[in-house]
Image (cartoon, helix red, strand yellow):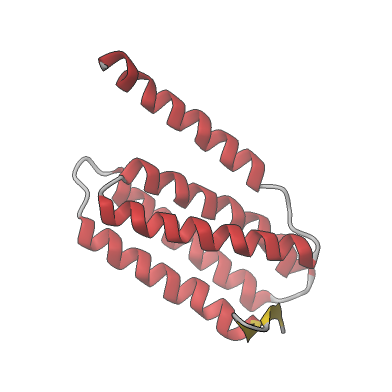
Length: 144
């Protein structure tokens, strides 16, 4: 059993590298953008659940997925000359960095991490969706 747990950190680092490598391809089309948004929704949901359950290594993996996706999205919005969207993404990356530092601490303040996650979602996801997304769950979402 102890041998198994000695491999867990190694596997986490490898999987983190795979996730980051896979998500740094620049987003150029609306279809790619939609796919990244779906991945962000899944990662954000998993991040919140991981923080809530105290699985901070898993939470850091999800934060890394979001970081890679946000980095890839910057080119999409910069190419469309949407500086406010790029600024929202940069702010989101800063918030993810701060959350990651919290999650990497020897003792994680779960309440503070959950608050930082909510703040990230509101200030980043919520702000961008309010400004650039239209539609609803029944009719579907699209970029304004």
